Image (tube, rainbow, N blue to C red; front, top):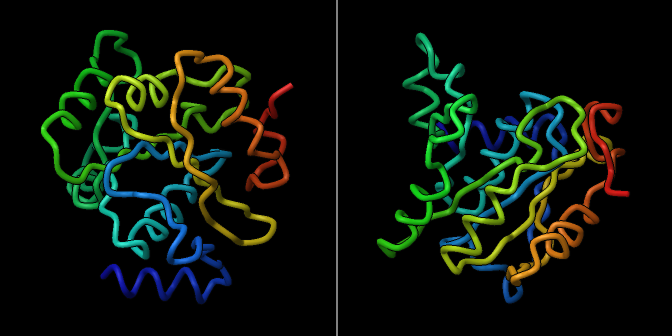
Length: 186
């Protein structure tokens, strides 16, 4: 099924922009923040990109997507249900404990936390990478160019605000499916 979906996305005109073989970031143990998140199509295209890299990423998705027949499909695709309304869901602790077990683990997060315009990104992607001691490998989708790819690896520092500015500066509203739904860094 994965090969068929990868071929279908390519048939739709999407290009998967992969770094050169010798310069690819380590994707088996990292957190991948991805933006701009303005469409449900982001998930399908992003999952296809991970598959083409041979990565079985874990993606946090709001629990509402797991109701009914869609639930088993979401779990099979690597999605992890998250209760966004519960501030005590321990998403960060759970992810850090999973990294501590060793072995491959790639967690993909849309730091905006919603497809609606938001100035404030969720801090969880940074906290997970920082506490687990794994890198951030920012990814993007560009609907205008029909490209999806990776930026350079970023190791977190003890300065969250500086790290956030660095990550946010990579993204432009023109990349989004719905540009008016994405707020660029000031």
